[in-house]
Length: 341
Image 1: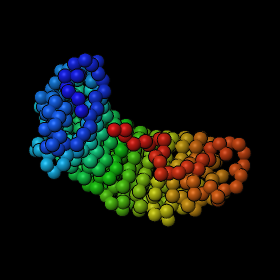
Image 2 (image 1 turned 60 degrees about the vertical axis):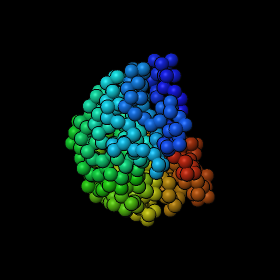
Image 3 (image 1 turned 180 degrees about the horizontal axis):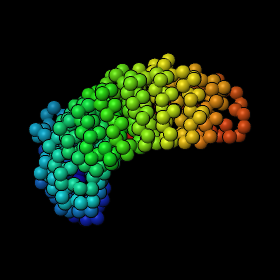
């Protein structure tokens, strides 16, 4: 919360972040504040005052009494001005159910020609329509979390647009409109290196058909699958056999803890590139299983749930003790940390 005039003192600003809750009371008290409310005029002022801006982050939530524009708090005119006035703008992060809509995303991607990273979280107004513009861009990172109106159609625009050549990192979490049909389209992303799929379509719609399909993405180096309960040993074995360049793999709460057998984990003992393997919720592993996995010549870290500590005696050799670690998986693994807002 600060007067916009303050920005005139920072013409070299490269990172702009704002957050707040919009209410009528706050709008009366803070008439000069940035989020009272975000308007085209204020975005135009930022674009004119901070032409070197590279990162724009806004997190705005409203109460029932707050006035909401038909296409979100951030208008198309102001967002278009931001894209034109800040030619180095590359990272966009929006969080809040009504912070931005389809028209605003269209305006940004039509005017901003250096956009590389887009993060959308808890947004109700974004739908497949916005992905026509996103799919035609050259972004390399896309993170979607809790965006209920994005469906397989939107993923189709990514998989069949220019992004099929440029997208390197994709995170899909709690997007209930996405089904296995959309996940299978991801095989068209020819540059994808980092993929995270978590809690899609009420946890039970991604089966081994989709799991085996994504195992054919030969460019992947990092993969995290979380809370996808129907996947089984078939998917895990396919990952081990098909991902020749995979370096990081996290399998978190997969297959009800039943579909993933010890034999499926043994398949990674023959992998040539895997460096980090995390297996939360694998409660049926013992020391002999781990020793087989350690046959993987490239493995640098094998992380198991802390609850398994009592199942293991002294590991043979200093290298084994150095590689195997027991962690509490209440905290995110270091290879897939969440976006910092």
